[in-house]
Image (tube, rainbow, N blue to C red):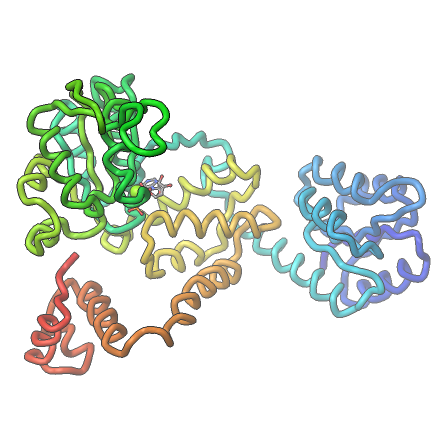
Length: 448
Ligand SMILES: Nc1ncnc2c1ncn2[C@@H]1O[C@H](COP(=O)(O)OP(=O)(O)OP(=O)(O)O)[C@@H](O)[C@H]1O
Ligand SMILES: [Mg+2]
């Protein structure tokens, strides 16, 4: 049983809601004006409010705002004859728990009240995550306590003392760009620029001028001279993302620059110098690209003077709870949400999930969950729903994959899950060891 306040100027609605809710075992208070409603809200402290928007004296949306400012954690359900988009958006933005249209459907009211009661109960029985509401988050902190991440921290510590080139290798969303920034911020030249360049985001014809700059008139459209990323990085850090995408001719020019620390702008003769540190990132196996003749071997050795393998999330599951708390504080601050609790079991769902997109996907999931959460506690069922829709996406495109593609992907996933133990993988897949070996060869599958 909970205390419910109903505010509506239509006596028939007040009466029928009163009867219905009392019958369901709740304690009900009613008010036929906004002012009386506010008074009852203060004296009775109801857990649920059901309120009309159009009232004779006050606007329900303004009352909603006053109630939300009191931070009593009441669930406020708005009812209205308005069908317009604007009112709905304002109500939800101001923190309404639900929004129900007239003519009232008792089933809809019942569902909303039951859901509110359910959440109130969980809220009451769930402790707040310690310090999450007041914690200040530093966007440039790398979260992790697992052994694999501790090794990454050690490597960052070693490398930030010098200017050697660093190659960051890891799957998508594992934190390579974040690590590059942290290396820069801990270096002696941290006040110099940190310039990011994504080698996959620019068409091949513009890559050279983007990197090395160009002189006026160097090519059609070059109306003015322009500095390239190397010049902009000056004596700081140049972070080259997706380095494997760099075409061979530009690889050659980059190698020349790294060897001599000198370069010329496109269409220019003047020799420029730069001592910037180059950090590169790649989400594939760059050594394999070298073997395939797609990446220059000498450039590869120059770039990987110091290499950091960034582990995927599935190899550091113990970091997930910490990451979740970190994102919770960070996103609450960014979105102005006040989620401070997770229902028992939510963290476990997150630990058990298969994070193909690694930390970025985890972060996006928390954003999505917080946007949809209408109180202070995140429910298990809501998290399940969010993760289920994510998983459904690739399925929809399955019809366009060949059988061989699906077999290869499934084989790779199983091998990774079983840490490339071929005997166990063959057993899990229901095939013989020689068959597994021949398929690995046929599909050219390698450990990440
Ligand atoms: N260990 C971590 N602690 C806190 N935040 C992290 C961590 N790792 C990644 N993130 C966050 O996850 C998001 C993705 O990280 P980032 O962009 O660095 O990944 P990436 O490896 O460069 O991905 P991609 O290969 O797709 O470019 C960022 O918002 C980043 O701040
Ligand atoms: Mg990146």
